Length: 205
Length: 205
DNA sequence: GCGATTTTGTACAATTAGGCACAAATCTGG
DNA sequence: CCAGATTTGTGCCTAATTGTACAAAATCGC
Ligand SMILES: NC(=O)c1ccc[n+]([C@@H]2O[C@H](COP(=O)([O-])OP(=O)(O)OC[C@H]3O[C@@H](n4cnc5c(N)ncnc54)[C@H](O)[C@@H]3O)[C@@H](O)[C@H]2O)c1
Ligand SMILES: NC(=O)c1ccc[n+]([C@@H]2O[C@H](COP(=O)([O-])OP(=O)(O)OC[C@H]3O[C@@H](n4cnc5c(N)ncnc54)[C@H](O)[C@@H]3O)[C@@H](O)[C@H]2O)c1
Image (cartoon, rainbow over the protein chains, first blue to last red):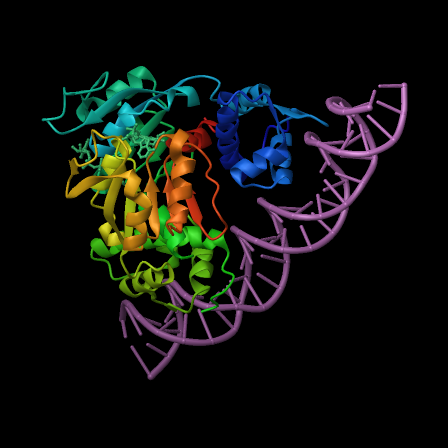
């Protein structure tokens, strides 16, 4: 386990491998090979072997990888062998969809609060959650020691709320607003923007 | 314009530049520099200059880039100097959010239909759209010559519907289901999976 | 009008990522 | 138990990507 200095590009692929493996496990499969995984996720077998081997020798020659074992290892590496509490800021359409989504639990994430600043929404229920007032965001996040937030806000207010989240100790932000956020170096941001993804395909049409 | 063989990695960055430029334009700015753009999107100025210069000489020494002009050029390059009709398959929470989203229009996309196979949903309205029966998917897509689809379906049916979309002539799929899709080589797929994005950050926490 | 300043586009260098190929380990079928 | 088949992990090489630095062009302040 060559712990330091794993390239980020490898880290971005691991969750894709993990997702594929979890799906195989759900289908009752017990072992797989770099070849089979590669076919499923569209990455060369050699690439997958090399990526995985950065963290240890998890496979067996002639057999391949035990799916359950590799899932355990990847979860450990990605630190999703535990549950992370996550908050949602912005209880609009996208915030609603995320709050009701059941697919986070078996990937290591647990939505625990949702915030908005609209007086008509505060206090209303989404599933099990009661929409909370953004005025209490920093206080609540600090108290619950939340490290991860999903931002489903209008672009115009996204940077301001981001600053508050950082102040409150959040270290990872998944941003749905179509704007690049600036954060200190020790905070990670990932962007989800469907229009950007679509534009990455139209070039080739 | 060195048309052929632009690396894909450059193409993935262009929509990010375009989004930042459109935001600058909305804020009334007229010119920018590779330095300023880089600061906004978190990419080195040299990288941005080199990316843009693959397609022509759009800047001016001492001044930088005309924002409006560069927007025009990027839209042309990415082929979003036109409107693309897009369909949504799966009228659940995520399909609803996308159908109601107003942010596609000024990025080159126009949602035109939404499909589901749930008899209770077919015929219902989402905004201006009436949910259509997936049974008619291939026929409708062919007739309207749709090239782009967004998939907001359960993972279990995503590959089957993908095959139908490909059969109907769709060439670009934005997939929200947590599963890798397999498609012919001339069809592009992009994945949006928030759990995957979150797992790319927990590694660093 | 002109020297100081800004900023592009690119040549070149350095770094990073990816593909190939194979020894070694293991399995399989008879 | 053995010959043939499978599959990993990795050394080595090539390709792809990014960074550095600077000449040339353009602007700006006075
Ligand atoms: N809906 C989609 O499918 C979709 C798709 C792509 C991107 N997005 C982006 O995701 C973000 C949210 O989209 P949406 O469709 O849910 O929008 P929305 O307008 O439905 O919801 C935004 C919510 O944020 C709340 N809000 C506004 N200012 C706030 C503040 N200062 N503090 C707390 N809450 C505040 C509003 O009250 C509202 O409930 C937007 O940036 C949008 O561009 C949405
Ligand atoms: N909701 C979210 O925030 C979220 C987040 C991440 C990923 N996703 C993924 O996006 C997809 C959709 O999520 P959702 O929350 O909207 O789910 P959902 O269950 O609310 O909606 C799925 C819809 O697909 C329809 N459907 C099922 N089989 C179909 C078929 N064969 N043909 C046509 N329609 C069919 C269902 O009737 C339903 O309306 C899922 O794969 C989910 O994992 C959703």
